[in-house]
Amino acid sequence: MVLLKSLLVLASACLPVVSSKYVFAHVVVGNTAAHTVDTWKTDISLAAAAGIDAFALNIAYPDTNIPTQVANAFTAAEAMFTNGTDFQLFFSFDYLGGGQPWAATGTESVASYMTKYKTSSAYFLYNGLPFVSTFEGTGNIQDWAQGGTIRSTIGDVYFVPDWTSLGTSGIGAVLPDIEGFFSWDMWPNGAADMSNTTDLAWKDAVSPKTYMMGVSPWFFHSTVGGQDWVWRGDDLWADRWEQVMDVEPDFVEIVTWNDFGEAHYIGPIHSEDEIAEGAADFVNGMPHDSFRDFLPYYISQFKGTNYTITEDLMQYWYRTAPTTGGSAGTVTGNIASQGQEVVSPDEVMQDKVFFSALLKESATVQVQIGTNAAVSYQGTKGVNHWSQPFDGQTGNVTFSVVRSGAVVKQGEGPEITATTQLASGLTNFNTWVGGC
Image (cartoon, rainbow, N blue to C red):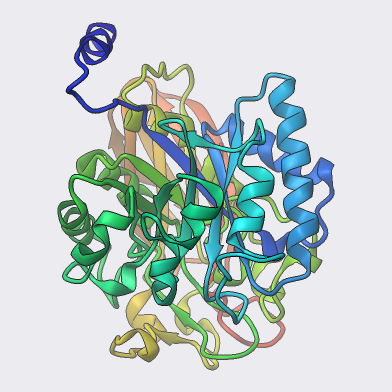
Protein backbone atom coordinates (compact mmCIF):
# COMPACT_ATOMS: atom_id res chain seq x y z
CA MET A 1 0.00 0.00 0.00
CA VAL A 2 2.84 2.44 0.88
CA LEU A 3 4.64 1.62 -2.39
CA LEU A 4 1.44 2.12 -4.41
CA LYS A 5 0.84 5.46 -2.72
CA SER A 6 4.38 6.58 -3.56
CA LEU A 7 3.97 5.59 -7.21
CA LEU A 8 0.70 7.48 -7.46
CA VAL A 9 2.34 10.58 -6.00
CA LEU A 10 5.20 10.42 -8.47
CA ALA A 11 2.76 9.94 -11.36
CA SER A 12 0.86 13.12 -10.65
CA ALA A 13 2.75 16.40 -11.06
CA CYS A 14 -0.08 18.37 -9.49
CA LEU A 15 0.31 16.65 -6.11
CA PRO A 16 2.77 17.91 -3.46
CA VAL A 17 6.03 16.13 -2.74
CA VAL A 18 5.58 13.43 -0.11
CA SER A 19 8.45 13.14 2.38
CA SER A 20 9.14 10.80 5.26
CA LYS A 21 8.73 11.75 8.89
CA TYR A 22 11.84 12.51 10.94
CA VAL A 23 12.92 12.67 14.57
CA PHE A 24 15.65 15.04 15.73
CA ALA A 25 17.43 15.70 19.03
CA HIS A 26 18.27 19.24 20.11
CA VAL A 27 21.96 19.56 21.01
CA VAL A 28 23.17 22.65 22.88
CA VAL A 29 26.58 23.10 21.28
CA GLY A 30 27.49 25.55 24.02
CA ASN A 31 27.46 22.56 26.41
CA THR A 32 30.03 20.57 24.39
CA ALA A 33 33.24 22.41 25.29
CA ALA A 34 35.04 19.19 26.29
CA HIS A 35 33.93 17.26 23.17
CA THR A 36 36.46 15.81 20.77
CA VAL A 37 35.63 14.37 17.37
CA ASP A 38 35.47 10.96 19.05
CA THR A 39 33.01 12.26 21.67
CA TRP A 40 30.77 13.47 18.86
CA LYS A 41 31.06 10.06 17.23
CA THR A 42 29.92 8.45 20.48
CA ASP A 43 26.91 10.76 20.71
CA ILE A 44 26.01 10.15 17.07
CA SER A 45 26.30 6.37 17.50
CA LEU A 46 24.01 6.44 20.55
CA ALA A 47 21.45 8.68 18.85
CA ALA A 48 21.45 6.64 15.65
CA ALA A 49 21.00 3.42 17.64
CA ALA A 50 17.91 4.98 19.25
CA GLY A 51 16.41 5.74 15.84
CA ILE A 52 17.06 9.50 15.86
CA ASP A 53 17.71 10.89 12.36
CA ALA A 54 19.69 14.06 13.05
CA PHE A 55 21.01 16.48 15.65
CA ALA A 56 19.65 20.02 15.64
CA LEU A 57 22.81 21.94 16.51
CA ASN A 58 21.68 24.81 18.74
CA ILE A 59 24.29 27.55 18.34
CA ALA A 60 24.20 30.91 20.11
CA TYR A 61 26.10 34.15 19.53
CA PRO A 62 28.60 35.08 20.76
CA ASP A 63 30.20 31.85 21.96
CA THR A 64 33.85 31.09 21.21
CA ASN A 65 33.14 27.39 21.68
CA ILE A 66 30.85 27.24 18.64
CA PRO A 67 33.27 27.29 15.64
CA THR A 68 35.45 24.48 17.03
CA GLN A 69 32.62 22.24 18.13
CA VAL A 70 30.56 22.71 14.98
CA ALA A 71 33.63 21.69 13.00
CA ASN A 72 34.15 18.66 15.28
CA ALA A 73 30.51 17.63 14.90
CA PHE A 74 30.61 17.75 11.11
CA THR A 75 33.98 16.00 10.96
CA ALA A 76 32.53 13.16 13.04
CA ALA A 77 29.24 12.96 11.16
CA GLU A 78 30.90 13.07 7.73
CA ALA A 79 33.29 10.29 8.67
CA MET A 80 30.49 8.15 10.04
CA PHE A 81 28.25 8.90 7.05
CA THR A 82 31.04 7.69 4.75
CA ASN A 83 31.23 4.50 6.79
CA GLY A 84 27.51 3.84 6.53
CA THR A 85 25.93 5.60 9.53
CA ASP A 86 22.91 7.42 8.14
CA PHE A 87 22.83 10.31 10.61
CA GLN A 88 22.92 14.00 9.85
CA LEU A 89 23.08 17.50 11.34
CA PHE A 90 21.41 20.86 10.82
CA PHE A 91 21.56 24.27 12.49
CA SER A 92 19.13 25.73 14.99
CA PHE A 93 20.22 29.36 15.38
CA ASP A 94 19.65 30.49 18.97
CA TYR A 95 18.74 34.18 19.06
CA LEU A 96 18.52 34.39 22.86
CA GLY A 97 21.05 32.03 24.44
CA GLY A 98 24.23 33.95 23.68
CA GLY A 99 23.01 37.39 24.61
CA GLN A 100 22.97 38.76 21.05
CA PRO A 101 20.89 37.89 17.99
CA TRP A 102 22.57 36.33 14.97
CA ALA A 103 23.64 38.63 12.17
CA ALA A 104 22.21 37.63 8.80
CA THR A 105 25.52 38.02 6.97
CA GLY A 106 29.17 38.63 7.84
CA THR A 107 32.10 36.63 9.12
CA GLU A 108 30.22 35.08 12.05
CA SER A 109 26.63 34.91 10.89
CA VAL A 110 23.76 32.73 9.73
CA ALA A 111 25.02 33.03 6.17
CA SER A 112 28.62 32.14 7.04
CA TYR A 113 27.65 28.92 8.84
CA MET A 114 25.09 27.88 6.24
CA THR A 115 27.45 28.58 3.35
CA LYS A 116 30.23 26.56 4.94
CA TYR A 117 28.22 23.50 5.96
CA LYS A 118 25.05 23.23 3.86
CA THR A 119 26.85 21.20 1.17
CA SER A 120 28.34 18.76 3.69
CA SER A 121 27.40 15.13 3.16
CA ALA A 122 26.22 15.22 6.79
CA TYR A 123 23.91 18.23 6.43
CA PHE A 124 20.23 17.28 6.64
CA LEU A 125 18.16 18.06 3.55
CA TYR A 126 14.38 17.99 3.34
CA ASN A 127 12.73 18.01 -0.08
CA GLY A 128 16.19 18.70 -1.45
CA LEU A 129 16.75 21.85 0.62
CA PRO A 130 19.02 22.52 3.63
CA PHE A 131 16.84 22.23 6.74
CA VAL A 132 17.31 25.02 9.29
CA SER A 133 15.55 26.11 12.48
CA THR A 134 15.81 28.70 15.25
CA PHE A 135 15.25 29.22 18.93
CA GLU A 136 13.08 32.35 18.82
CA GLY A 137 14.44 35.33 16.80
CA THR A 138 11.20 37.18 16.21
CA GLY A 139 13.13 40.44 16.04
CA ASN A 140 14.94 39.15 12.95
CA ILE A 141 12.05 37.72 10.97
CA GLN A 142 12.79 39.88 7.92
CA ASP A 143 16.28 38.35 7.65
CA TRP A 144 14.58 35.06 6.75
CA ALA A 145 11.90 36.41 4.45
CA GLN A 146 11.51 35.07 0.91
CA GLY A 147 13.93 37.19 -1.08
CA GLY A 148 15.41 38.53 2.15
CA THR A 149 19.06 38.87 3.14
CA ILE A 150 19.73 35.27 4.17
CA ARG A 151 18.06 33.52 1.24
CA SER A 152 19.52 36.03 -1.22
CA THR A 153 22.99 35.20 0.12
CA ILE A 154 22.88 31.42 0.54
CA GLY A 155 20.01 30.28 -1.68
CA ASP A 156 16.78 28.59 -0.71
CA VAL A 157 16.37 26.67 2.55
CA TYR A 158 13.68 24.63 4.29
CA PHE A 159 13.06 26.98 7.19
CA VAL A 160 11.26 25.70 10.32
CA PRO A 161 11.65 28.33 13.07
CA ASP A 162 10.54 28.33 16.69
CA TRP A 163 8.70 31.64 16.90
CA THR A 164 6.36 30.41 19.61
CA SER A 165 6.30 33.82 21.31
CA LEU A 166 4.22 35.16 18.39
CA GLY A 167 1.31 33.01 19.52
CA THR A 168 -1.06 31.22 17.19
CA SER A 169 -2.85 34.49 16.47
CA GLY A 170 0.34 36.15 15.28
CA ILE A 171 1.87 33.41 13.16
CA GLY A 172 -0.35 33.97 10.13
CA ALA A 173 1.48 37.11 9.08
CA VAL A 174 4.78 35.27 8.62
CA LEU A 175 3.54 32.05 7.03
CA PRO A 176 4.71 33.16 3.55
CA ASP A 177 8.29 33.34 4.89
CA ILE A 178 8.52 29.86 6.44
CA GLU A 179 8.31 26.29 5.20
CA GLY A 180 7.31 24.83 8.57
CA PHE A 181 6.95 25.74 12.22
CA PHE A 182 8.40 24.43 15.50
CA SER A 183 6.49 24.92 18.76
CA TRP A 184 8.54 25.22 21.95
CA ASP A 185 5.42 24.69 24.06
CA MET A 186 6.13 21.21 25.43
CA TRP A 187 5.89 21.51 29.24
CA PRO A 188 2.72 21.91 31.32
CA ASN A 189 1.80 24.91 33.42
CA GLY A 190 1.60 24.31 37.17
CA ALA A 191 0.00 21.27 38.77
CA ALA A 192 -1.26 19.76 35.54
CA ASP A 193 -0.15 17.16 33.03
CA MET A 194 0.78 18.22 29.52
CA SER A 195 -1.88 17.84 26.84
CA ASN A 196 -1.67 18.07 23.06
CA THR A 197 -4.10 21.00 22.89
CA THR A 198 -1.46 23.57 22.00
CA ASP A 199 0.14 21.26 19.44
CA LEU A 200 -3.17 20.82 17.66
CA ALA A 201 -3.73 24.58 17.78
CA TRP A 202 -0.29 25.28 16.30
CA LYS A 203 -0.64 22.59 13.66
CA ASP A 204 -3.94 24.10 12.57
CA ALA A 205 -2.61 27.68 12.69
CA VAL A 206 0.36 26.95 10.40
CA SER A 207 -1.42 24.63 7.98
CA PRO A 208 -0.60 23.85 5.17
CA LYS A 209 2.98 24.36 6.34
CA THR A 210 4.71 21.44 8.06
CA TYR A 211 4.64 21.16 11.84
CA MET A 212 7.48 20.12 14.18
CA MET A 213 6.38 18.96 17.63
CA GLY A 214 8.60 19.22 20.68
CA VAL A 215 8.95 16.28 23.05
CA SER A 216 10.80 16.62 26.35
CA PRO A 217 11.15 14.30 29.35
CA TRP A 218 11.63 16.75 32.24
CA PHE A 219 12.31 20.35 33.30
CA PHE A 220 14.28 21.70 36.26
CA HIS A 221 16.28 24.89 35.73
CA SER A 222 19.14 24.90 38.23
CA THR A 223 21.93 27.13 36.87
CA VAL A 224 23.62 30.10 38.53
CA GLY A 225 22.10 33.46 37.70
CA GLY A 226 18.43 34.30 37.37
CA GLN A 227 15.44 32.39 38.66
CA ASP A 228 15.40 28.60 39.07
CA TRP A 229 12.11 26.80 38.51
CA VAL A 230 10.41 23.49 37.76
CA TRP A 231 7.67 22.46 35.37
CA ARG A 232 5.97 19.12 35.84
CA GLY A 233 7.90 16.24 34.31
CA ASP A 234 6.44 13.17 36.01
CA ASP A 235 4.57 11.21 33.26
CA LEU A 236 5.66 13.65 30.55
CA TRP A 237 7.96 11.35 28.55
CA ALA A 238 5.31 8.65 28.17
CA ASP A 239 2.48 11.13 27.67
CA ARG A 240 4.21 13.13 24.94
CA TRP A 241 4.99 10.09 22.81
CA GLU A 242 1.36 9.05 23.04
CA GLN A 243 0.40 12.57 22.01
CA VAL A 244 2.80 12.42 19.05
CA MET A 245 0.72 9.54 17.69
CA ASP A 246 -2.45 11.64 18.06
CA VAL A 247 -1.06 14.90 16.63
CA GLU A 248 0.80 13.25 13.74
CA PRO A 249 3.33 16.04 13.16
CA ASP A 250 5.75 16.01 10.24
CA PHE A 251 8.79 16.20 12.53
CA VAL A 252 9.54 15.59 16.20
CA GLU A 253 12.36 17.37 18.00
CA ILE A 254 13.48 15.93 21.34
CA VAL A 255 14.47 18.65 23.77
CA THR A 256 17.22 17.97 24.59
CA TRP A 257 20.24 15.75 24.13
CA ASN A 258 22.46 17.62 26.58
CA ASP A 259 20.90 20.58 28.41
CA PHE A 260 21.94 19.47 31.88
CA GLY A 261 21.16 22.86 33.44
CA GLU A 262 17.48 22.36 32.62
CA ALA A 263 17.52 18.60 33.38
CA HIS A 264 15.87 17.52 30.13
CA TYR A 265 18.88 15.64 28.74
CA ILE A 266 18.59 12.16 27.22
CA GLY A 267 22.27 11.87 26.27
CA PRO A 268 25.24 10.81 28.38
CA ILE A 269 27.13 13.04 30.80
CA HIS A 270 30.65 13.06 29.33
CA SER A 271 32.31 15.65 31.55
CA GLU A 272 31.35 17.82 34.50
CA ASP A 273 32.99 20.66 32.56
CA GLU A 274 30.00 20.56 30.21
CA ILE A 275 27.43 21.03 32.97
CA ALA A 276 26.30 24.63 33.44
CA GLU A 277 27.53 26.35 36.58
CA GLY A 278 25.35 25.56 39.57
CA ALA A 279 23.74 22.45 38.08
CA ALA A 280 26.38 19.79 38.76
CA ASP A 281 25.12 18.90 42.25
CA PHE A 282 21.71 18.14 40.76
CA VAL A 283 23.01 16.27 37.68
CA ASN A 284 25.86 14.08 38.91
CA GLY A 285 24.62 10.59 39.70
CA MET A 286 21.36 11.24 37.88
CA PRO A 287 21.69 9.54 34.47
CA HIS A 288 18.93 9.93 31.88
CA ASP A 289 20.26 7.49 29.26
CA SER A 290 17.40 5.03 29.71
CA PHE A 291 14.96 7.64 28.40
CA ARG A 292 16.31 6.41 25.03
CA ASP A 293 15.43 2.75 25.64
CA PHE A 294 11.97 2.86 24.07
CA LEU A 295 12.83 5.34 21.31
CA PRO A 296 13.23 2.69 18.56
CA TYR A 297 9.66 1.59 19.31
CA TYR A 298 8.20 5.09 19.69
CA ILE A 299 9.91 6.33 16.53
CA SER A 300 8.82 3.36 14.45
CA GLN A 301 5.24 3.91 15.62
CA PHE A 302 5.46 7.59 14.67
CA LYS A 303 6.86 6.79 11.23
CA GLY A 304 4.46 3.93 10.63
CA THR A 305 7.23 1.37 10.15
CA ASN A 306 7.24 -2.18 11.41
CA TYR A 307 8.75 -2.93 14.81
CA THR A 308 8.89 -6.39 16.31
CA ILE A 309 9.10 -6.52 20.11
CA THR A 310 11.68 -9.25 20.66
CA GLU A 311 12.11 -8.84 24.42
CA ASP A 312 10.36 -7.33 27.40
CA LEU A 313 11.80 -3.98 28.44
CA MET A 314 11.18 -1.59 31.30
CA GLN A 315 12.19 2.02 31.90
CA TYR A 316 11.60 3.89 35.13
CA TRP A 317 12.35 7.27 36.63
CA TYR A 318 11.82 9.01 39.94
CA ARG A 319 13.24 11.58 42.33
CA THR A 320 15.14 9.94 45.17
CA ALA A 321 13.55 12.01 47.96
CA PRO A 322 10.20 13.76 48.42
CA THR A 323 9.86 17.42 47.49
CA THR A 324 9.46 18.38 51.15
CA GLY A 325 12.50 16.32 52.16
CA GLY A 326 14.77 19.32 51.70
CA SER A 327 14.73 23.05 51.15
CA ALA A 328 13.40 24.37 47.83
CA GLY A 329 15.85 27.26 48.12
CA THR A 330 15.07 29.76 45.37
CA VAL A 331 13.29 27.21 43.16
CA THR A 332 9.69 27.99 42.27
CA GLY A 333 6.98 26.11 40.45
CA ASN A 334 6.40 27.99 37.18
CA ILE A 335 8.14 31.29 36.42
CA ALA A 336 6.67 34.79 36.42
CA SER A 337 8.74 35.98 33.42
CA GLN A 338 6.70 33.62 31.22
CA GLY A 339 3.43 35.06 32.44
CA GLN A 340 2.76 32.17 34.81
CA GLU A 341 1.44 32.16 38.34
CA VAL A 342 4.29 31.18 40.67
CA VAL A 343 3.46 28.31 43.01
CA SER A 344 5.35 26.09 45.42
CA PRO A 345 7.38 23.31 43.71
CA ASP A 346 5.68 20.66 45.84
CA GLU A 347 2.39 21.62 44.16
CA VAL A 348 3.92 20.87 40.76
CA MET A 349 6.00 17.75 41.37
CA GLN A 350 4.40 14.47 42.45
CA ASP A 351 6.20 12.12 44.85
CA LYS A 352 5.83 9.04 42.69
CA VAL A 353 7.75 6.37 40.84
CA PHE A 354 7.03 6.53 37.10
CA PHE A 355 7.55 3.45 34.96
CA SER A 356 6.79 2.00 31.54
CA ALA A 357 6.89 -1.56 30.21
CA LEU A 358 7.31 -2.56 26.58
CA LEU A 359 5.95 -6.09 26.54
CA LYS A 360 6.09 -8.73 23.82
CA GLU A 361 2.91 -10.22 25.28
CA SER A 362 0.68 -9.73 28.34
CA ALA A 363 2.42 -9.87 31.71
CA THR A 364 2.27 -8.62 35.29
CA VAL A 365 4.54 -5.73 36.22
CA GLN A 366 5.51 -5.41 39.88
CA VAL A 367 7.05 -2.48 41.76
CA GLN A 368 8.45 -2.84 45.27
CA ILE A 369 9.82 0.05 47.31
CA GLY A 370 12.21 -1.15 50.01
CA THR A 371 10.75 -3.97 52.10
CA ASN A 372 7.17 -2.86 51.50
CA ALA A 373 4.76 -5.15 49.69
CA ALA A 374 5.11 -5.24 45.91
CA VAL A 375 2.30 -3.65 43.90
CA SER A 376 1.15 -5.41 40.73
CA TYR A 377 -0.04 -3.95 37.43
CA GLN A 378 -1.51 -5.85 34.50
CA GLY A 379 0.21 -5.06 31.23
CA THR A 380 -0.68 -5.88 27.64
CA LYS A 381 1.44 -6.29 24.52
CA GLY A 382 3.11 -3.02 23.52
CA VAL A 383 3.78 0.03 25.70
CA ASN A 384 2.19 0.33 29.14
CA HIS A 385 2.74 3.19 31.57
CA TRP A 386 1.92 3.66 35.26
CA SER A 387 2.95 5.64 38.33
CA GLN A 388 3.05 4.68 42.00
CA PRO A 389 3.16 7.10 45.00
CA PHE A 390 5.98 6.91 47.55
CA ASP A 391 3.50 7.42 50.41
CA GLY A 392 6.41 7.80 52.82
CA GLN A 393 7.99 4.53 51.72
CA THR A 394 11.78 4.41 51.49
CA GLY A 395 14.40 2.02 50.17
CA ASN A 396 15.67 0.71 46.85
CA VAL A 397 13.03 0.20 44.17
CA THR A 398 12.71 -3.15 42.39
CA PHE A 399 10.92 -3.50 39.05
CA SER A 400 9.87 -6.90 37.72
CA VAL A 401 8.08 -8.38 34.73
CA VAL A 402 6.29 -11.60 35.70
CA ARG A 403 4.75 -14.03 33.24
CA SER A 404 3.26 -17.44 33.99
CA GLY A 405 4.51 -17.16 37.55
CA ALA A 406 8.16 -16.58 36.57
CA VAL A 407 10.18 -13.34 36.73
CA VAL A 408 11.34 -12.75 33.14
CA LYS A 409 12.92 -9.32 33.65
CA GLN A 410 14.03 -7.46 36.77
CA GLY A 411 15.94 -4.29 37.61
CA GLU A 412 16.62 -2.12 40.64
CA GLY A 413 16.84 1.61 41.13
CA PRO A 414 18.56 3.64 43.85
CA GLU A 415 17.22 4.20 47.34
CA ILE A 416 14.40 6.60 48.02
CA THR A 417 15.17 8.43 51.26
CA ALA A 418 12.96 10.48 53.57
CA THR A 419 15.17 13.55 53.25
CA THR A 420 17.32 15.06 50.53
CA GLN A 421 20.59 13.32 49.71
CA LEU A 422 22.35 16.58 48.81
CA ALA A 423 24.89 17.96 51.29
CA SER A 424 23.47 21.44 50.68
CA GLY A 425 20.15 20.38 52.16
CA LEU A 426 18.39 21.41 48.95
CA THR A 427 15.75 19.28 47.30
CA ASN A 428 16.90 17.76 44.01
CA PHE A 429 14.09 18.22 41.50
CA ASN A 430 16.01 16.24 38.86
CA THR A 431 15.07 12.62 38.19
CA TRP A 432 17.06 9.40 38.17
CA VAL A 433 16.34 7.21 35.14
CA GLY A 434 17.03 3.50 34.67
CA GLY A 435 15.89 0.49 32.71
CA CYS A 436 16.09 -3.26 32.39
